[in-house]
Image 1 (cartoon, helix red, strand yellow):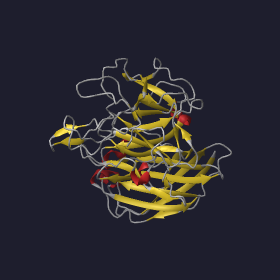
Image 2 (tube, helix red, strand yellow):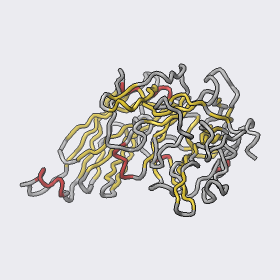
Image 3 (cartoon, helix red, strand yellow):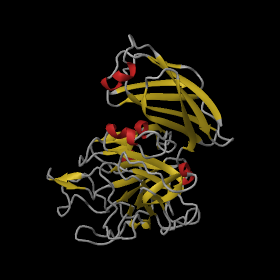
Image 4 (cartoon, helix red, strand yellow):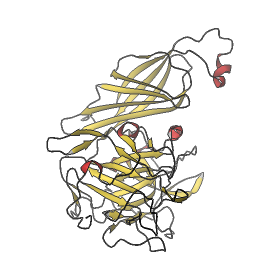
Length: 410
């Protein structure tokens, strides 16, 4: 592991009420420095970043400072109003075949003590071939009054230049299911090398064996909570989406409000946080969940799980971080950023639409368009940087292709 120390110089112009007692008796607050000792956790074959992007956010005071620095250089940032900061550091390297993203963050850091050195471990993760392209999670309103949340969907996109196969791909949401001050400490060895999922849905098939669901470069698939036309009168005429074209849906059983789309492929419920399967659909929080997609390297056993000794009613499925293809953390709004659930190596930031039942979505920003017209999306493993907010969800935004095996989309 390689250690690098960056020093961030902070000039304080004022002092907050909460911090008054800490500097009582001081005639003047002078410049202070904070050191960040970075440990790079990576394989020997993965090159280290040559530079880092350092971002300081004081969300309470709406302050943001951004610096791009060479690895090992001294960073000086002046005239920062004191407060509690979230600090994120990111870097990128390339070995000629793969792009690797390094991310790390420090939350709720009170920048008062001079020359304080904080340790930070940054881990390398490959930029994903298949990624979350657009997510609509916050729900909509019926007639501007009644809440409606069955029109959630997730769009996955082949961001690479080679065909990818979706057979056996899984999607799951992390505990806690919404941002919370509760911190789970799951009872398992090598705790930090895993994510802990409430539910897991899986595309039919075996990864690396079956090839029934190819996804060509520039194509996308839709995973619908309910693959129906949500704009029809019986559901929500004011919904922004018709999901009859969805390739996959998370259907469990028929009720008065849910029907099984005869075309969309039912995903397999590989893990459910309770043995009861009475819920009609996979209804994740409209406040914003934290999601991963991954290819399991062994069969998922729904009868095994881990618990936190303090919260034994919550049964989580532990999935190695090394299996993860892509991840994104969603939140209600920026005030929740200090309650991150996702390991920084998977997503150093988060994204949000700013409320509930707004009929808005988040989608990735375009990085480049190749000569043949294929869109390549930004993927730095930091959703705060990679995503934008849209007033209206759009299926296959930016002209994403439809896989040939979806014969019902039109």
